[in-house]
Image (cartoon, rainbow, N blue to C red; front, side, top):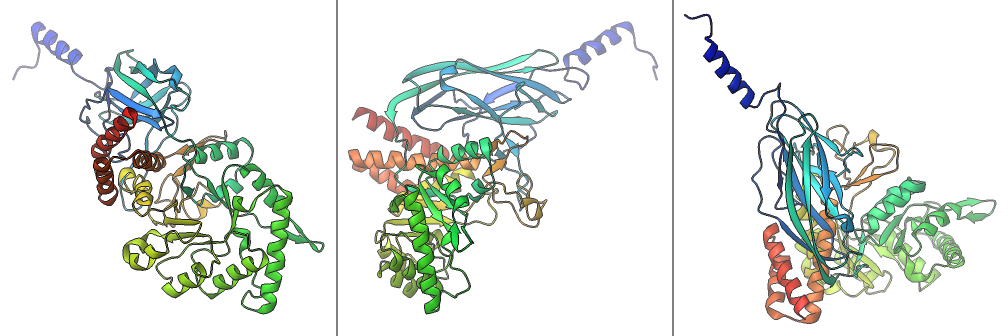
Amino acid sequence: MRKHFTFIEFLATIAIFLSAPSTLLASAPELNMVADPLESYYPLSGRLAASPVRELRFCRGEAGIASAVVFNPSGQTMYCRLEIKGFDALQPVIRETLHIRARLGQLPADALPKISADGVIAVPAGENRQLFLDFATRQAEPGKYRGTLSVRNTISDETAEVGFEIEILPLVIPEKHPLSIMTWDCSLRSATGDGREKLLDLLTESYVNAFHVMERPEFKNGTWDFSKLNSIMKILKGKGLCMLRLAAPPRNPDIMTEAGVEAYKTYIQAVIENLEKEGFRYDEYVFYPYDENTRDNFYAAAKAIKAADPQALVYMDPTPKSTAAELHRVIDGKYVDYVQYSASLTRDRNDIIQPLIGKTKYSSAYWCPVIQKRLRPSGFYRRMGHFAYRYDLNGIGYWTSVWLPNCPKKSMPWDDFSGKIASSVTIYPGRGNNGESIPSRRWRAFRVGLEDYLFFYLLKDKGNPALEKKIQSAVEHPQSSPEYASLKNEIIDFLLEK
């Protein structure tokens, strides 16, 4: 056996070494656009299929979203600097999608933090990292904008670049949504200062206009102290409907007794008088006495609120445990104004629910899935807007929560396996001390579905039977993202022609 290379063999070996990917040599990153920016499931390892997407178009006010993927073909971790050019008028924001361990073992790319100020992300050897791009469209002038997204290996300076075009259409979608939209985001009460403002902006930019208010007045020195309540109400003034959980009747005296009813009526009247002094109209708040309860104690509380002031609005959220008799006695008796049905009721007991829709000021539906992060954004969150259209509702909501201070005791937003229960967040806590809140891909999908609703109704208002038939099929049967995109483009083309 030979123990020594010839000189020629030595040179050939060096040439092969220099031309091949190696843990000792830097390589050029690879960059491609992603066909569906709402898809949260894709493999971390290996190249993803390249997408032909190079042209995007958005109406003014629409969520301008796109996605790209960076792949590291080398044998070592690559630090990549990202840069976007040509879209300054659209205020682009680059976000890195982070994978979250969901409760049943899935690994969705869900959280969407902004990339660091230096623009650098780390991509391990042989892996890919997806980017999520946000563009502001509301104030943009109609027209075509052309630019590039580039990624540079910070060691070798080798760069990959992809060019694309964004067209802002002259069609403007409404800034305020006709649906009543709530998400049970109770953590506004725990946020403060700039952090609270940022969180509120994140909610309202996705059309949330009904807010779960937890603050309850304290009885001090013979009078009610509303200072805590008024502080949060002041912040929410003009943002939408305030859902007052302070309406929960005290245990003593019991609401099921005559004395309890009279004491409760006096309390409700004090709340209304305070809100009137603070400049709130009746249509700016609703009393929320019990959660998922339509039993006798709810009936007693709803009747007492209406007896205290017939103009006061009352909220109820029936569940599959509710009976037809319980629903009819409060709805037919006009003791409730905002009814938010568990979405499962429309599936399992539609014969009872359907005749009741439209009999109250608000007819809404809500979801309360225990394990949320595993659910595909387009297949679940986007379809909430479609559901409202299908059942002719004027409200929609789902149970979620922004991170709360006591979450580590039960669940951790970034890892469903770290706590006793899966975290339900669709808005993640910031990773620093700047009060930032981080949207999820599911949160973006929720907004997109609400925008679908707007397009559906703009089309219905203009009238096009053929397209209306396609819309009805789309809201009744789940479709793929390309199918939704095709339908939306047809709707937009028709609206622009009109």
